Image 1: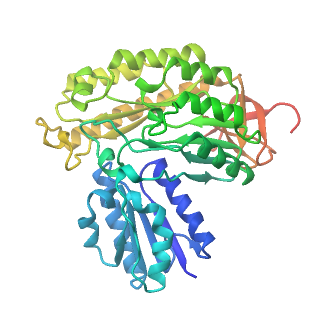
Image 2: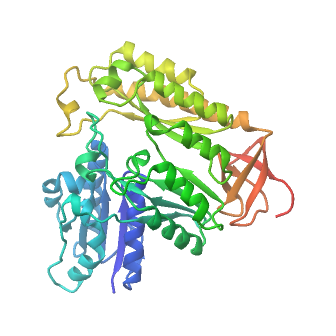
Image 3: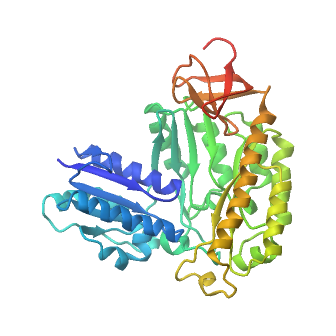
Length: 426
């Protein structure tokens, strides 16, 4: 049996799939080791959302080849899907697997180790069976992929090419995986997907119907459910009402905005404009005054003038959200935006990113301060640390791992975390 190291770049979905592959490898008798240690096999799960992610993939591959020149190096993920020829040039790379081949990777690695030609079938998208996967964060919190692929065609994005069309696990498959996670000891589950709100293809069950079935049929051992990123045009009032009416569902929402300029949103081919986005934030705040709300935003998109950026800056400054994820625009080969005129200089993109990150820091601090004096509920991932329902990481004293407890958030801090005072007995 082999020592195998895995490394993941990119989104939570990639991390979830890497964890599933790791579980399969262990079940086959292999041992996992850290990426910076010597191993027999290195598996890199790549991302292609930005050119920085692609550069990092090459850097990581060169590092492991220098460290272990006789090791087998396997590459998968979105960069491997879209630009395998760039990865083939790296020394030591012996196998490149597309995203739809990930379910067969564990067997292919066994074939390589036995010096056999690996078999990696390449089914067309329409024949894909959904590959449910889950990963754990610490010992209490798990991520569960329920949807993959995307039918949207945003002008800057390579995900539809890398991940294929939108498709979803059946509700029965999701519930079965929830019971497996509960039996493994996880007490919070985060539902992930490339376009989570588009859940339902090809079986036809809506995302709301999935949530209802999970609540009715899912394991009682799961204390809390949480949604990952969801498109604002797909976050309906009915979904918000369901979460408000069922206490196990966390009041935490991550809505990609990408730009606060309607002109830029049009160039990006997004399916909403500022008014709809603002409406969704207001709908959340009406139901959940203390909800955690995160925002994705891209700066420096082709054609973004200083006026366009100031629109985004002022829109976000006034919006009652909790934190921002800020990305400087990165040209992706093969996307329409890569050929757009009026490219923004890279130094301007970085300057604009820093302005929005400063806004994010202020909003994150103000949001936590607004929650001081309120009773929240924390799932303890260690004896001293856990996450509240509205996505504030807190420090407690003398806690027990796995406990789900009411706390009073205080204004004091320890190691950058707000302190929560445990209420009642554990």
